Length: 170
Image 1 (spheres, rainbow, N blue to C red):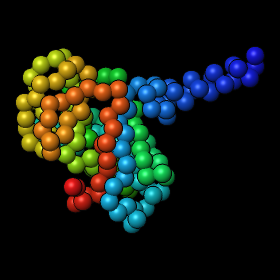
Image 2: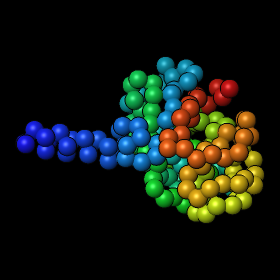
Image 3: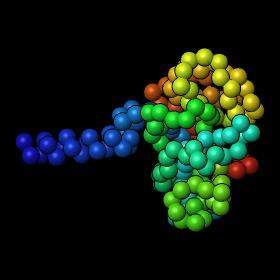
Image 4: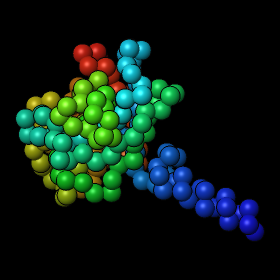
């Protein structure tokens, strides 16, 4: 009984932290593409950040930060609710070592033309996705690829949100 209780508690903690895909909430998943060999891995962090209507990073709208995985893959759990708008995953060098993405940190790369959109209701909404566009979204998280310009979509996990070094977008 004691072993079963410990195993159940451990599984619950792992699931609650979003370490297992499909368990603990929606996730955005991708790989590190391009040349990351010159990056100081001890300072590298990931952030899911909101974008302003002009496409600039909104430091007030940052949602989650995690250290990148050594396997060149990452998974970030999306919050159940967020401020309405567009978001990107950003890799950055935490220059001030405060564990939070800020204006003094160096952006190392992002998900290029792929965006996550959060909407508080269904309908046509205006989002920054490389340019300002009106898109038809569903309440909650939506994925969008500005390169293909296919309609925004909802998924259990948003896969293929690969991180590219700055200047190396496909």
